[in-house]
Length: 170
Image 1 (tube, rainbow, N blue to C red):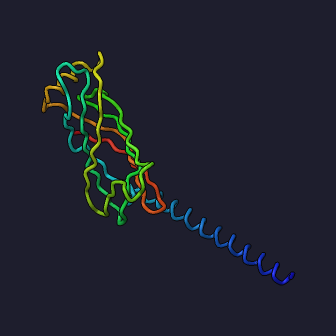
Image 2 (image 1 turned 90 degrees about the vertical axis):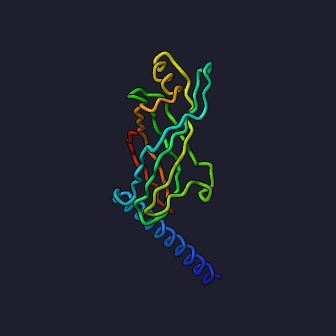
Image 3 (image 1 turned 135 degrees about the vertical axis):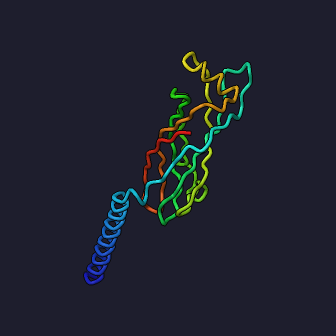
């Protein structure tokens, strides 16, 4: 009986050691990726802003904000979330947080290696005293508006997660 117990203890100890080795390798891979920001940082640029919905009497508008996302790495990445502030002619209009945290990885937007992808988001705005002038410009679909987005995008690939900061003007 003691021979069997010794064999079981040896197997359990071996499994624990193997688990510790795997955890150390995974941790070092994640640390290694974060040391190489040029290969893992996504390049995010504001590509267009479209007026989706507005009525003359309404005090709200809906904008569709598009980002061009370039994946410079050699691996496909999925988006976990994007957060940004949208400015119009230098004035903050609003913030948007779009999360795919509750979405299965296979259903998230995927960014293929060395390729550009369009990422659309929706931003609903309500008119306030501080935004009245720019609000009427947006509702009239003025083409001379200078747009700016500042934010961060979190992407994942296998076991690594990367946060890329961005600031882009249009």
